[in-house]
Length: 134
Picture 1 (cartoon, rainbow, N blue to C red):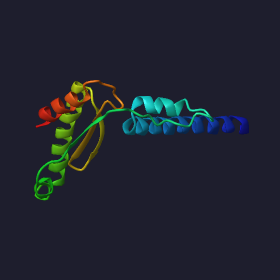
Picture 2: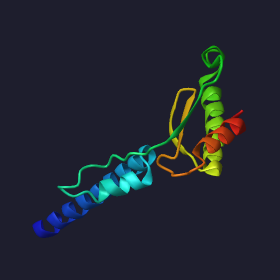
Picture 3: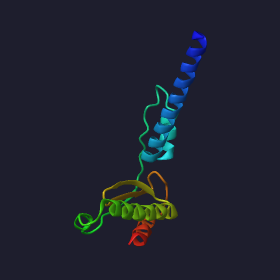
């Protein structure tokens, strides 16, 4: 009985550990580019450097005019839904133009081109994305 009980505890502990690893993987994949999470997974004791350097990079910041004033007059549910719809559209445009969405902060949307997705026409990609966003 005690052996079976110990095995059950070990099995449950393993299931909980797998669940926690799945949560961590999901968080990492939402926060970092895939090639960086791959480096983190395959890191060795002597290979701790994951930083990269690029010679050129184009950054696009977008910000909504009068957002705070408009948002203060909206129901929270409506506000969240509108932002979700807008950012889902922006996310699709990022995929279309092959640029990397770095982060959203409130009403600000932050994108980079040529880092980490390499592209010799990185400035043009951000320009076309910006036009499409308007």
